[in-house]
Image (cartoon, one colour):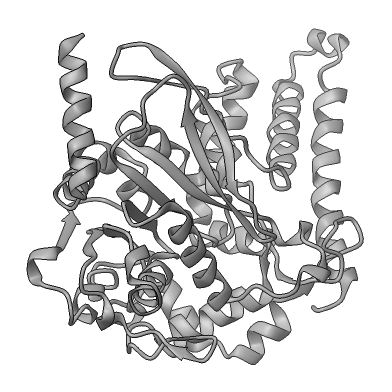
Length: 427
């Protein structure tokens, strides 16, 4: 599995399916076929359209598509996506709202590096923009990073977060979603000992595997039962000749996508069949519900092999963060060193990826933090996606997170917030 030819074969299969779809769509769309009463002509054209779009999305990085936001003055303000810190494996980007005074709530949204792009958090960003100054991590596709840039593992990820937090300053509120939750916790603990003044004001951990052993799921069972040798032999591949990262060892996004789909194969099969029928009937749209979801879901990115393997081994198998024995560059990162940063955990009662119990375990590790600075929330009926982007996030969790941020804001930022409110009333 470690040969370039294997990676290129997988890409060749993807391109072939995209070509088959485009061919079927083109051939069965000739006007002459309109004379036929056979419904399979339209169904085949519809199958081709859905197939071509689906396989094309697998190698495309989605756009943020966040163009404007309504300000407190009632006007639409244009949004620019600005790169604040540029790094080989990921950038820190800022959603800069033109013509709006700086918001008192400065939020660093830490996106997962688990097979999808940071744009998976688009709706989360949109929901926070009216009330916050939003920054987020924008991880790069490993296939596009030359081998000369070196490695990127779980420790490098933590050090990236440390650098981003230092850049933003101590009046920042960090929100880590899913996979990076334990690493954001470790980065904060690293700062607690290395540069206490640079710690964020608050840390919100949403659906993250702080202690994967606290509540087993299919994901944790897989990480526990498979050996590292099996993963390295059967999962890791070398990037093929088509991309700038040729020769780099990666965990391919296409392989991750296959695993995602296999977990709910019947649901996905039904969704695509229904979409083909809608296309054949002329009932679909460019940005209908199906396309909005799958344009994002199918857009996958490769992870560096060392990041994927170190995550499985150190976080899921050895549970180093849960056992408080995690090290960065040979230095012990003691979670109990956090004494000033308020920490909140959010879990979904129906989360089948990071089950309830995995994330709230963080609070037990914070032995140096007062109980008054700890908070937790379990959202009834919510699955994994719902706790950061769905109805549960919009209606229940987001207001709680904003209230938590406000309760742990520095004096200067609190004054800025009240000044903005007075300015709004004056208008």
